[in-house]
Length: 354
Ligand code: 1CP
Image (cartoon, rainbow, N blue to C red; front, top):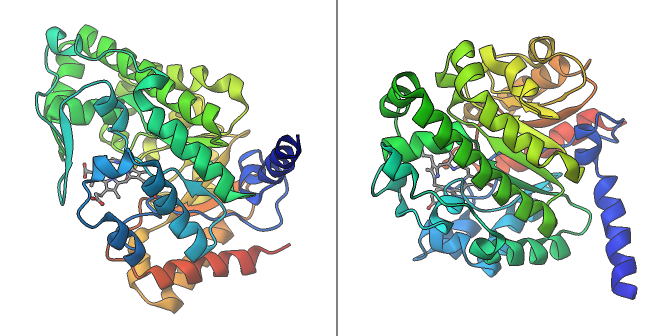
């Protein structure tokens, strides 16, 4: 049918995109750019469509998810879209009583502290998240040649919210379980690995052409503890999606000491925050993996000259890499001037055009 033909042509264009080429460490026409949290409060058009709609409710509405995901692609001409959702959506979908409170973040009504609490975490099936499948179908039709990145929270970062009951700076309850009841902890992370893998598979099967595992808070761990108590669960997630042929990105904040392990867990692309320059990060990660990053998101508040100077430093440090996806070292901050982001995309594209 004509539809099947145009779908195949579009799939080829997606596969030939600068973003997927960089993830595969192939030569690129220019360094691809996208931004973590590129959709969201920095955009007035986002604030407008979200008016009066709760965060989790908006994640369950395919029309809104499609519109919000497309907004930064239209405005900034980034090289990839990231599915608009949240890391706690799969937990909500299996019936955990949680909400995303404005100005706070995810809040879990009954924190997971005991084996009985763990038993409340059932497996995720595609039927639990039909709105995700529907949104990604709509999105891939609208995106044309632009790849869509699916994502999920890694077991440790999800556990940090589930065990603490909300955002934390110290993760004392989660880490107390990790150090004090290693068996319960291992079972919790293994259960979360299955949920995360199932959530990523739904997104890949619906049309996502890369996935990112956010272990945002893994930087709180010493390497030996990460290796022993967290990496097995994250590695299970990466193994579960290995056969799908989509690049797998692994990202955390403050993970300078963990970069080698983030790669070893099974990633094709390792995300780097701004604390380690990309040439040094490449030495820590070792050969055979692309890197993503790593402009300090606060640089965007410093004015055009400073943004370009610091962006050029990132490009210079990445010059010897086989695969580089330009990004910030963490998410776009809500008060960022969106025009600064648009100009940054243009700067990177122009400076790296081959
Ligand atoms: O009402 C709102 O606008 C709430 C703000 C918000 C938004 C826009 C939250 C609450 N989540 C999101 C969307 C979101 N979350 C996206 C899609 C947007 C995009 O990237 O374009 C993504 C990828 C996430 C992932 C996410 N949620 C992470 C990992 C990424 C990261 O920044 O490290 C984490 C840790 C969360 C939890 C979360 N959800 C929301 C907040 C404010 C937080 C962080 C809370 C905390 O500080 O612990």
